[in-house]
Amino acid sequence: MDIRLSKEHGVNPSLSYCPICGKDMDVVLFGRLPNDEQAPRKVPSAEPCDGCKEEIDGYEKQGVVFLVIDDRYHEFKNKSTPWVFFHSLHVIKREAADRLTNGFTKDKSKVFMDLSVAKRAGIVKDPEEGER
Image: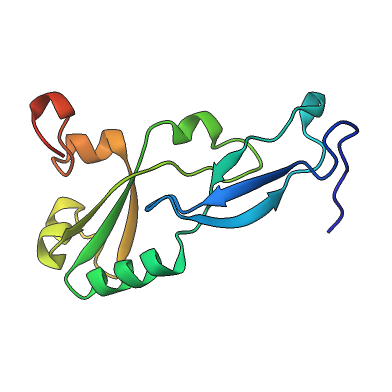
């Protein structure tokens, strides 16, 4: 893989962090960005850290894991970098999850869901309505 060097910022490094716990993970080399912009200091990783992966795997034994993604994701989804803004994690018993999703989760252990959809489904409440 080739990296186009930025004239001003070189390899234009950034630090990725776990989208769930916030732990620093890897160095990301952006190289030359449009308009030779400087890369952000930190960016969310597309994957959770090993500790969070293990924790999620443990939750899968209890039911279906719903990883709720913040609506800010839509601002970036058409970009070349898969930005993910994690909002919250919820575990729902398989039978309830299958009813909630009309059977969509029948053969799934993890599901990503937009925050707006999770609110409509009653998985996440608005802060004004009480705790999440």
